[in-house]
Structure formats: structure tokens, C-alpha cells
Length: 290
Image (cartoon, rainbow, N blue to C red):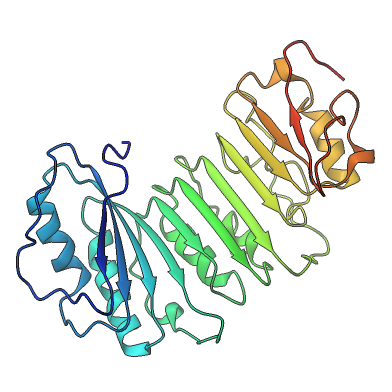
């Protein structure tokens, strides 16, 4: 499904409280996607589920709702998460993005996310650790398409695949994975998953962090689908690139772009040719080889 009507935004912000009245707006019949901003200053008691349900009645083709939560008030936040739980049980491709401001409000997401599942998109960037993001992802493993985790620490990233109790999570629909964290991942030894491919058929991999696994989990089996690859380079990563012929365009027919950070000396010629600031892009030219 694609967003046919670009730019449609249905906003629930502090000065535009929804009061249960029908919107005095006319939507094109082709609209299939909407973005809902939910702020913590609203005086409305209407929950997100009721709000989106009315939109759904007005826009019959709507099948994707992105909810962006801006909140600093704990009780409103808890209510919003409960409402999201109800939404996730409906037939929506629900994207969740949780944000909070630089003052560092501690939000009790972990108390409210147990029932949130069947998400298609998860963008988490407001946690000190990755535990809550990993829990959300595992609960939606069968439907998850896009996963983005950005935080200070990411010690729980391997639990995306294995929870330590012998339970593996499969992500058959996951095509885009982005991991970014500020503190270096220090796992000794790095976990090995015995042949697991994660994601199984990725299109985009963006790993702005230390490589989190002890083997080629991110590279195995992706030659036919991978379109974009961005990764912080080290000798181990380069070795995996070579093992799976990442630098050989004919082995990855859909791969259009490789970003490898600032480790120019690790990249084989002729790809280490275009440098801009602290990163460079390697264009996979037809016929090029290493």
C-alpha cells in the first residue's frame, strides 16, 4: 500500500482538541494513509481508537495510520498506550513512534506495552536501553516490516532474535532494519545464532553501531533482495562483506548503494573513490568487481 494522497495530516495537538464533532473536511476517495499527532496538552478525553474510527468511517480506504506521541504527562501517556493497544488489534498497519523532549521525562512504557502487537512499523528513540523496543518488536515479529532503534545503550539487541530461554523470533515481513546507539556495544562473546538469517529478506540495512552479532547473521541469504546497506566498518565487517561478495555487484543485483562510514582504508578498490566529509557512498557500477 502506498500513500496516495501525500501530506494528509490529522492532528490532535494542544490547541486543537477533538470534541467528538464530525470534521468539516472533505477527503478524496483515494486517501489511504494518515498521520496522527497526539499531544499531551489536549483537554479532550476522546481516545485514539475512537478518533481513528471516526476517520475510518469518513475515509473508507484508510488502511495505514501513523501515530506520533508527544507527551510528558504520565497518566495521559498511559491512557494513550492503552488506546494504542486497542488500535493494534484492529486491521490497521499501525506505526508507533514514541518521543519525549530533552528534559528527560521517564515514561512508563514498559508498564503498558504487553498487549501491543501486530505492528508494521516501530520507531523507538526515547529509551535509555533497548529492552522496551525489543519487547515491542518481538511481540510484532510476524507482522513487523520496519524497525528503527536509536538510543544510548543497545545491550539487548541480540534478544531481537533469541530471548535467552531458547525461544527464537522470526520476522518474515521485516525488510528495513536501522540500529543506532551512542555507547559502544560490549558483549563478550558476541552471540552466535547457528544459521539464523536476520532479517530473512532485507531491502535496507542501516547499522550505525558496532556489529551486534558474532557471525554473519545480517548478511546470510540477502543477496537477492538487498538494495541499500549502510554500516560502520571494522575488519570483521569487511571480512563478511567479502565472504558474501557484497562488493561484487553481480552477486547483489538490486544493491544500489553502500555507505561504509569513514574507514576508507578498509574498502577494496575501485569502490574507495568518492569521499565526502566523514563518510562516502560506493556506487555499484555495472561490471565492477574486486
